[in-house]
Length: 422
Image (cartoon, rainbow, N blue to C red; front, side, top):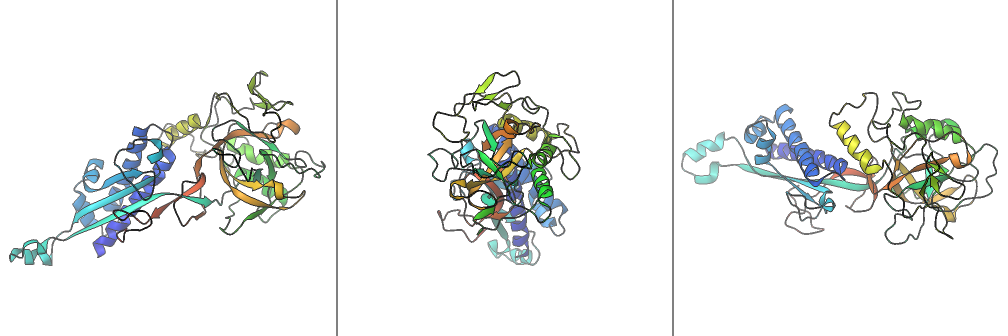
C-alpha cells in the first residue's frame, strides 16, 4: 500500500509536468511537441525516484537514471480527449491536449514474501503494483486578469469566439469616455472590439489601473461571479505606463519585460487610420477597414503580419530552452487574459457588465503616446493560454484561459465512467 501510494504520487507529478509542457509546446512541430512533453513527464518521474525520501525501491525498479530507463518503465501517451483514445504517437495538433502516464508492472523488492517463494508457493512471492494518471487543461476563470473588458457578441456567428476570429489582426479600441480626461461618458460603445476599464483591487483607482495593466492585481473570479464592474474616466496615461512594462518600458523586478520585445511590430509600427484601416509607419495599408455596415473592429481577410503569435511562441519556447534570454525578463508577458462582456445590456458610466467568457490575447506592440486613434491595442486572439484560478469540474475543449489539472482515468471504462485506479 505504501509503495502504491508513492508510485501514484510520482505518476501524478509526471503527468502534470508532461501536460504543462504539452500546453506550452502547442503550435510547434508534432515531433517536437511529442518528444519535449514525453521527456518532461519521464524526467519528473526520475527526479521523484532519485530525490524523494523513501523512493529507493522505485529508483531500483526503474533501473537507471536515463530517460531511456524511465521510458522502459513508464508509458506516456497523448489524446485530444480525457476519455481517449490515447496513443504514444501524436498524429495531429488536436491530439496535443491530454497526457496519460502509466506504470503497469512495478515489481517490489521481496522481504517476507521471498521466504514464501522459497518454500515453493509459486507466484505468491511476486508482488507488483500499478498506477495511471491523466492530466490536461481545464477552462478557468483566471486570477491574473487585465483590468479591461472587451465587448463581445452574445450571439456570435459560427467559427468565431464571441465575434472574434483567432489569429486575425485585431484592434481593441478604447471606449468613449476613457480616452481623455474630461471627455463625456454619455456614449457607451457596444461594438465588438471596444474595451472598457474594470474596477479591480482595493486601492486608488488610477494606481489599480496602472498596476493591473502591468499584471499586479491577483483577484480571482469565483465560478458564480457573472458580472464585472466597469471604471469610467480618462486614464490612458495609467493604462499606457502599466501596459508598456511588458515591452521593456518602465519595467521593474515586480513588473518585468517579456522575453521577446525586439521584433518587427513592437515599436509602434501599426496605427489605426481615420477610415478604420490599419496602416504601418510608412502609411501602407496592412488591412482594409471593417466591412460596410458591420459594427466594431473585427478585421477580415487580414494580411499576414511580419511577426505574429506563432513566431512569438517559437521564440519564447527557444528562450525557455536556454537560448540566452535576459534573467530580468519573464516569459508570456505579452499574452493577456481579458474579460469578454455583453456590453449591449449595459448602461453608461460605472456599471455591472455580464461576463460572456474570458479570452487570451497576444499583444503585438506597446501603446503609443497620445489619445484618439493612438489609444488602441493591436494584437491577436489566440485559442488558449495558461492561467491560474478555479478549474472546471469537467474537461472541455472550450477556448480561453485554462489551468492544468489531474483527471480520473477512464481507461477501459468509456466516457463518464472513471477508473478506480487513478
